[in-house]
Image (cartoon, rainbow over all chains, first blue to last red):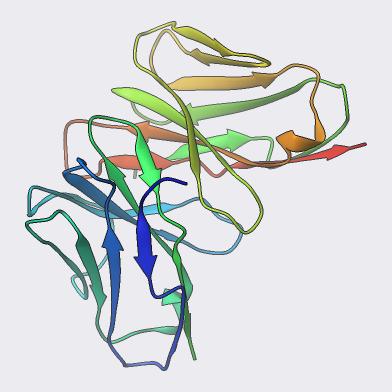
Length: 110
Length: 112
């Protein structure tokens, strides 16, 4: 048990819709990273937030955006959903280096 | 673009046999982390290697970081059924915006 929680567990959306995923980081961790993991593949880095500021971004379009709140919890927003956005979305909180992953949100886009 | 490749993609071993997965980055890394993901689960941190040529051991697991900090390996001695899962390396860069790059993973199946 990592202490990182994500909601919802599962979500079904249709193309063109928007979705917000949420992550509560482990106590004391001020850095949250978001990943997209397609079936059978490794996690792909979306972006990282450190003390409420974006601190790094992977190769994802601007319709993927995020927020980090003063309590270090975080949101991932995806606009104009596409079929290829179907994946497991993982958040990971970290203090220094080790990343603690949450259980993920399984997003299905129909 | 920057890539981290892992070989093999799949490995089936008989319980008690050894297992090794190799990780290769196209660029020099600040450090490398290893994770294990069980089927249906999320990645769980195993270890971090920082120094060139570093070797670390955790019971039956041995981790190495290459001299050029571009490759790494994970070796499991005498595999057990509890070792089943996918093993990922993750290259960490402190420069640039692309912080973490996960490898393609090696899926290990242990036959009892």
